[in-house]
Length: 247
Image (cartoon, rainbow, N blue to C red; front, side, top):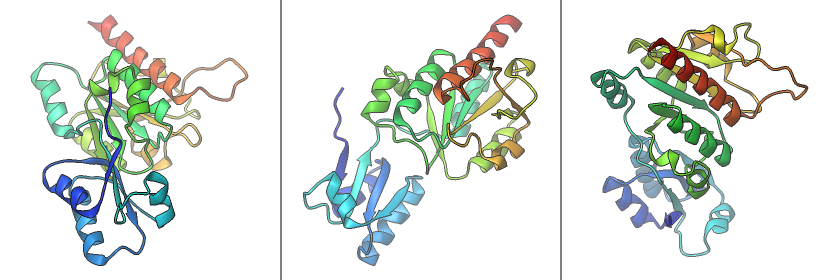
């Protein structure tokens, strides 16, 4: 599988977005002219594309060609609307299972999680527009292609996304190593979303507070914590186990 990782130049970037295309991320040179900056930011905002302002030497690390202060990293996936996926599940009499990934920045972890999510029956993965690993060739390879077969959505406000899911009848559960409830103590037979957090900091406190309930994964060894991709696989398997058992 081959795909160009980025395109560069003001006109190609702007034309790509105006033509319906998207990017994983855009690098915008610090101090670029106001007109270009405003146009790129406005188009990116409409498509929920993160824009990072960076000094010219960072853009030059990507390419020494005439990038004109704008580089867009091409997207391997087409991001979808959350409501369309959820509605589709209900129409098919499928109980929705959503995975929310809070600040997973390691691209291989992202790929491994997506692989488990696709295999174990998740219907959607929601990612933040910032502080999230890019879906690039490494992510696709690590996922064994699974990331291409599960819908992905981006949200500029994960807390708002949680509230929206709850208003749609979906219970939201957050992983929290401090929780006294184990993952096996919760009931996942109904529509639900699982929040998994960054390996270093876990799920953000505001998301833990917004969740319906929290859970932890039992551990008996000396290692401080599980890798987030392994933990995600354990939780998703528990959801699948319960649903298979109840049906």
